[in-house]
Image (tube, rainbow, N blue to C red; front, side, top):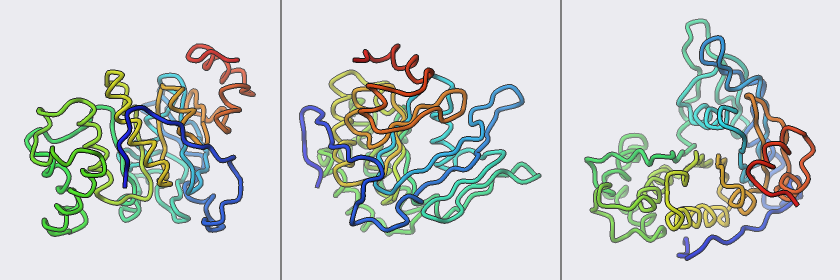
Length: 279
């Protein structure tokens, strides 16, 4: 069960590639991107033959300047947008492939249901209560009956410290509470992978801590996550691996201690020097 906390605490960062006895030999095949290409028209390329691997025990934090392809990566992984080329594997199975000649995206809908995403601006339905927001997808997508979905919703709200908000509406919640409800809603489908897209950027500092605590607790529970954030301190605390993107490409990746103290690539160092004081 998730624990209530008043300030964010770092999560230990095991060295990437270290042996983890509880994982299968295929752990490194959890997510694989191979030469993924995505553009909006001819002049705006947001994923330029991007390749990336993710382990089942990774908490992957993606950083980079605006327009580097970070949010596009998450939206593509969630199946919200198609790609023009390349392939994505998920749990060792083909998940997304470049669009065919008709332009339609090719995606495995069953695998898509195993991925959850939390957005920057909550995306809660304002006309539904907290409970209504949480049970909608499990009932419609998974076919759960309302009683079972409600029980599941109560469980997640209790874990996130929101059990008293079951019948509240989004307009009655603070920003931090809305974002925690959005996280609970994503967890309702019991995903294997969680995607977080700048989920604290619209919150004031106190509310940021609320949401970051929830994410740190999910990390303690070994939830696989890909996180896009501009908060370098939080990235250092939660990541097992940091990926720096620029111009739609993966420029550099590595353990947080290495990336933030001694990045190898000039482009990475230039970016970090602007957002973080380097020792």
